[in-house]
Amino acid sequence: MAKAANKSTAKKSAKKPAKKPVKKVASRAKYYFTVKDSVKVVQDRSGPKADKRVKYLVDTLVKHLHAFIKEARPTMDEWMYGINFLTRTGHLSNDWRQEFILLSDTLGVSMLVETLNNHKMSGETESTVLGPFHVANVPHYPNGANICLDGKGEPVWVKGRVLNAKGKPIPGATLDVWQANEDGFYDVQQKGVQPENNLRGIFTSDEQGRYFFRSAYPRFYPIPYDGTVGDMLKALDRNPNRPAHLHFIVSAPGYESVVTHIFTPDCPWLKDDAVFGVKESLIADFKKVDDEKRAASLGMPNPFREVEWDVILSKAK
Ligand code: BEZ
Ligand code: FE
Image (tube, rainbow, N blue to C red):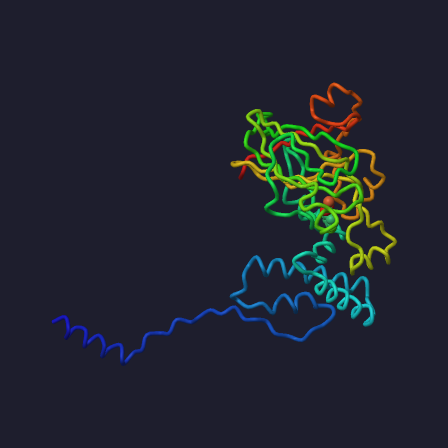
């Protein structure tokens, strides 16, 4: 019975073929380029399978790039110079040097992206640029250790606590720290000259959220300026220096990590940072201490500097 019924249905449908569903394909607009409609012409070339977020980012970039060209009106030679500049920037970039990040840093783009993505609402420690000199897998030290392996510079006692936004200590937080030496270079820029892992290390906050270690008073230094970024800074009569600072990445389970620095308060480049990384809240007080007893109790030479810096982490989202 069932078979017969099926046969008759098949016969019927053979006579009257079912309507093919009309596949709705958003048409990929194709029309000639005009200066007036340049943005729309490019944006409308995307097809129906375009990734929404990528399309939004590229469309917005095209809108602003075309506006830049229409306003600045580069000559063909200037345009080719720009293309060569970017090509050279790519060729200079490798595992050890990232000229594109440096370009983003010196154009203020890194700070803009970083600050818009890490907006702090309730007094948590502000973030700033990571920079190219962070090294993974450096030595873990007990609190109180000396990371200044070349013995240069004014000795500094660095101490503080890692806290949550309510002021509660966070034990077991990791503090990854690094800085340039007295001559204004990171160890990785002077392999064979500075001891390996000079002025870098990882500390862990104790039961009361405290950390402390010995370092050297940071010094300002120029960012690498022997490449395309340097050419741009020279052409713009810009300073290549970064104000003196000590880098931190502070992380703890259940909290957002913060990538930040503390700056010395007396550096002449504070308001002229080549990469715009200074935020007022990150300028610390490196006090001068002249006290034999205190120096002896900390195992420090006298006189020395002391900076107290609490890090406030926000809860993980
Ligand atoms: C740094 O602080 O190490 C740094 C940051 C951005 C560009 C170059 C260096
Ligand atoms: Fe730095």
